[in-house]
Image (cartoon, rainbow, N blue to C red):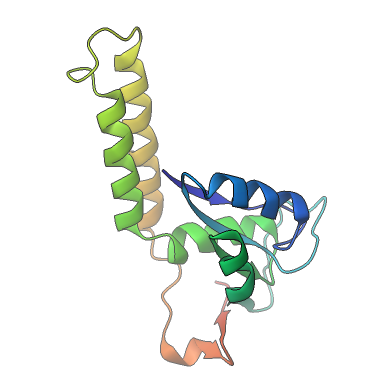
Length: 153
């Protein structure tokens, strides 16, 4: 399963890294989290300055995950993660795997399997609709010294 994670304590939070490392034994983990603690700012968005995103190679190797540090707030991290880092193909692959596990034809003896399959389908449609909005499109000039600079619209 593909799991996307963020928090408000920062990309190098021991709890986040510990959970990610444990989950990475059986799952593919992508983390996009603030570059420094943002407690109490979870729903805030960065409005008047560029966002910088860095791939954290050393931490990614240590935890067997993909970790990105973002200069913005936790909500910025989720938006960037879903818009630019996690691909539509990854979302579709995860949906197909989950759909097979919950498909009524494959699991006729499991109670409420149809409602579980409907939940997977609705969640996928919600993510797909969200990803259709091309709010961010990056060009080569958006990159500075291994960082991605995002102009907030």
